[in-house]
Length: 297
Ligand code: KIV
Image (cartoon, rainbow, N blue to C red; front, side, top):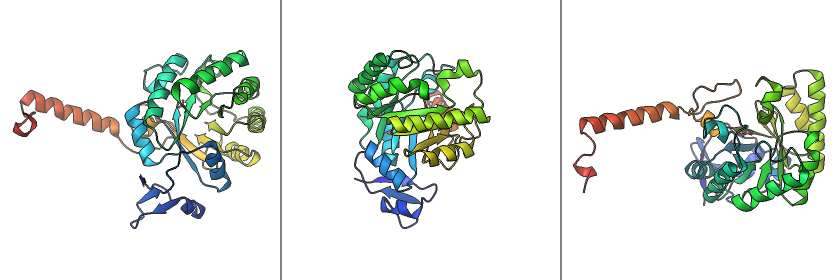
């Protein structure tokens, strides 16, 4: 089985070991259909192959992004914003995340699926954190969990890892702490916070996180973190030196048209296309043009 992928940027030569290019060089094909595992993510970092991660929350979108050849699908708690219409990620519950996670896992054949642990499910008692992570793994079939925070989450992360559950860390702008920050602006711009973040990243890597998301921090700091640890970094507003990148699917497809941060590249305008398509359908229904003779029994 092969996955046709629109080529946006050519990867380094080493990547050609894993991808072969079609004749017109406009698409590449993922030649290795095996399930992406933590081992493969580690290998990708060693081979300097960039890791492509994207969010998904439902069956149809997860099927499509998996067929496109994405390496990691994050069932992010950004579902709180883009699926539920909340202003922050705070309100989403573990029950909600389990429904989204299970739905995505059902769709996916190749990508690694990581489910976000929502606000309030890991910040307290580490045993409770482990219990919640186990629940997510058992009830969704995901390949691992992600949680936000640095050294203050050490005990929870170690407890989850002790259960054999892969953990992806998340540093920098950690949206579950938005009420503490009071702003979505770039984190770690001053030396003290940058030093803390680097130390956090080192601890997360040392205790066994298999990757770390770096959200909205200066590119030079993300580069320094990436060079200083032996696990991949996945940037979102962290610049090009990270080992991989992640975007929220709805943002990069142009479905979420109000959200325009500098780090976002918008690859389509599906929002406008949907409005146009539905507008055309409404006109056709109102005018009696739909259905025609060929669209009825
Ligand atoms: O919830 C999410 O989508 C995330 C990404 C922005 C990394 O955490």
